Image 1 (cartoon, one colour):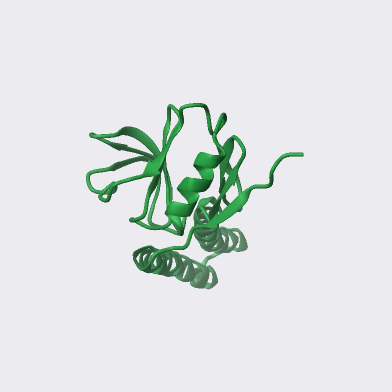
Image 2: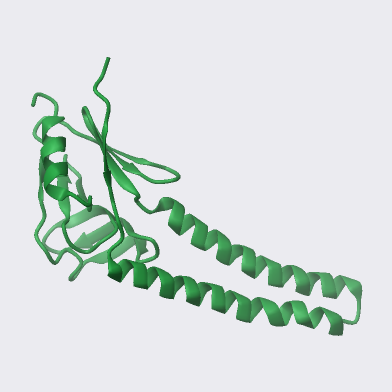
Length: 181
């Protein structure tokens, strides 16, 4: 029987909470500003078909905004599970499995990862920072973070940066679960 995984929570820092509230308010406000006039216009449409199309357009905008917010929340890291031979990024949908190979590097990362990083595919501040990023000094890397400090690097041939609430304990636990450890 294999050893159970140990869960490490990933809490949002105050900066990410602020960004999330601001971005969410902008998305909701902009979608309402676009959708409400459209639904109000249906009364001035000359025929039922045009009124239905205008009403559908307003609801489509609101639905897309809700889908955007939900998907950003659902793909954001909520925590990390250290298991024998792997680390799992806990997310409501599509958890990420990071394989721990012999020789995998697990260490605290220095501050300033976000400075000069370019997001190549991902999210940079709505419920989390996650996806593919690039930085001149590092190259390509994958980020699953809920804060901009206390980063942990896992390098198994690919570079992953994670932000568990207890980075020292997380590093110790992941190292203990490396193959051959």
